[in-house]
Image (cartoon, rainbow, N blue to C red):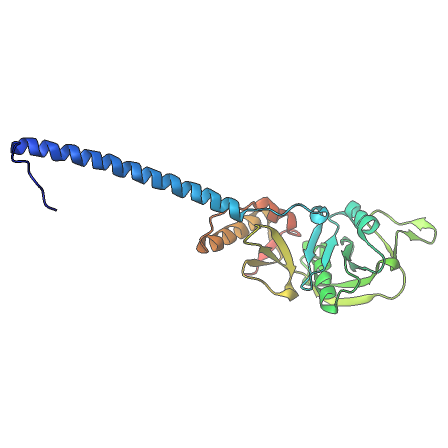
Length: 256
């Protein structure tokens, strides 16, 4: 860097002049750095907002639910009261009703009477995983499927207990149905969902199986894993681990 001295000023006066000039440039640089930092903060905030657009809550979001590989909605009650609600309010003649052959299992309805065998298998895994087989750490359990019109809350003139049902006619069996799920994240909407094991994982999925690890601890681990993956994609987002807790069937072990 060349310094140009003013011949009309003494050496000391030239030094003072350059010091003042340097001071002004430092102030400008500091201001520029501050402006850049503020811009990055705003951009980061906007980016997070853009990514974190949530879908409108649907009527089935207070139930356990997922979409099959064929796009059929599957719903299941989270307790005995919801089991009755699923059947009474949301099951339509011609649709499929599934239930694990174990005490303590959800009423599951496939909202598509034309669901394929593959979709029914996925729904069976969903029914198995949200049953008490998970809590008891079973690797599999039998599940049956019938048409909704084969299901009743009445049996021989009596009324069946809350959350239980009477089944008439032949059942379609899914023997030794796997107990296990994928917890997945949509990187655009930040919506968490579950996926049966037979469908296979997508990029942002974690396989969970019945185990002894507390749901809250599992949720924290899954949240950290997803956040790291999104960060690697250049997306810095905030994830709600409580949303993961809600969809886990029980205590778990992470299988990947």
